[in-house]
Amino acid sequence: MSNVKYILGHFEDPDDLMHGIEKLQENNVGIYDVYTPMPIHGIEEKLGYKRSRLPIAAFCFGLTGTITAFSMIYYMLVYDWPMNIGGKPAFAMPNFVPITFELTVLFAAYGMMFTFFYANHFFPGRAPRVMDLRATDDRFIIAVDAKANPYPDKIENLLKDAGAVEVKHNERKYVSYE
Image 1 (cartoon, helix red, strand yellow):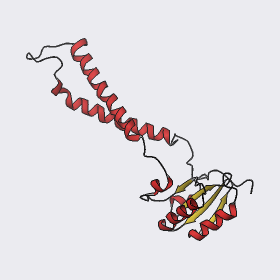
Image 2 (cartoon, rainbow, N blue to C red):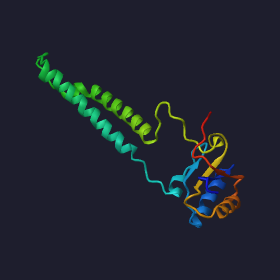
Image 3 (tube, helix red, strand yellow):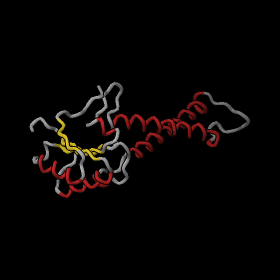
Image 4 (cartoon, helix red, strand yellow):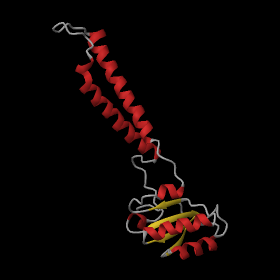
């Protein structure tokens, strides 16, 4: 049992999965992660995940795009190449709303994308981290860290009582697609 890193409980139904999470939490068993082939509403609150900070990052990137747009427009039309066109002011704000909006959206979108990739370790050439290949197909999987929980038989019985179809002991951290 010393090589086992994770105990995986396979479920066929999302309701059984939620019941399994409840059973494990009632018995103070720490859950490493849950893998599902589709989103399950309410699972984040049940597992105790905090709300994502991605919207804050999006706002910061959008603000950076707005400041960049105004800075570029001011530099180009007031400082670098001032022109008097029909007596209008060099830095007339309503004229620059479309450009400012476009740069705000561009910076926010690319910034969120790069932040998401960085936070989730989605780098080019990196193999995906998957506990079991069926987790992306048709199975709902609860992964329990075997090193942090000293009673594997108890965990296995709890998972089976909750409706697990199969309980596996994963010796490797991740399965590759090769």
